[in-house]
Length: 243
Ligand SMILES: C[S@@+](CC[C@H](N)C(=O)[O-])C[C@H]1O[C@@H](n2cnc3c(N)ncnc32)[C@H](O)[C@@H]1O
Image (cartoon, rainbow, N blue to C red; front, side, top):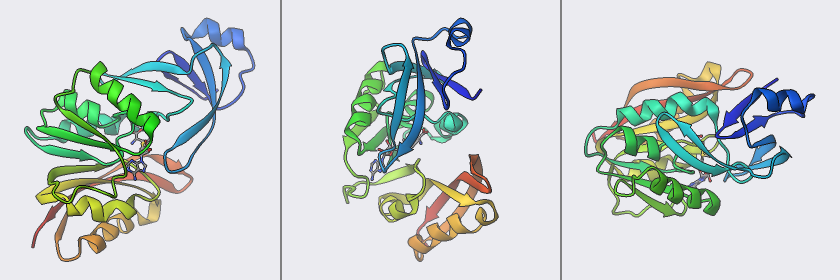
């Protein structure tokens, strides 16, 4: 049986054979089955199999995330990456979280590092509402500035030290926006789902193409998880210097 527990909700990818056995085993409020996650704003289609609520508070890496699983996705496979990023941020940095969701990266950064500011942009009003709730829940309102909107339309006067591009499938369409607001020597964490044999070429070449004559220094490539047979979700840490 494939399952994950998010807060007090058990998430399954199939109908349970023996509901009583599950309820004896897990201390939970609800059981949901996620059928698909679709679209740009990653909306889930779920069925509530047991219980009355799809809302919960999930705790991870010392952070609290309030979310409603009927409206918002949670990727368990990104747990280590959320923690890794939160420890890379240097004191007093300005960080841009382009696909902030409910604060997947912004919250741990604000809790485990000491940034000057995290600018967290989210396009989905449902996720944005939970982002605002999670900022209050984690008491990091002095560190995170949430913005409802499209991260393609960034304020041209914005300048940041680090950009998190925690999104897959069309992330490369946003590279131009990310690079345009980056300080000299700034760092981008660029996510991509890529065929395994192209891991060392396609993502970095996409960044170099958009960076044009700037210097792109590859600091690290991390495989976050297997996405599909022969395809991985990877993240590249790159530093961009004016040359
Ligand atoms: C769900 S997160 C990805 C998963 C996350 N990295 C994690 O750790 O689980 C991606 C978010 O980006 C948002 N998004 C998509 N396109 C966007 C855009 N153009 N501007 C701002 N947010 C966007 C989606 O609504 C979604 O909430």
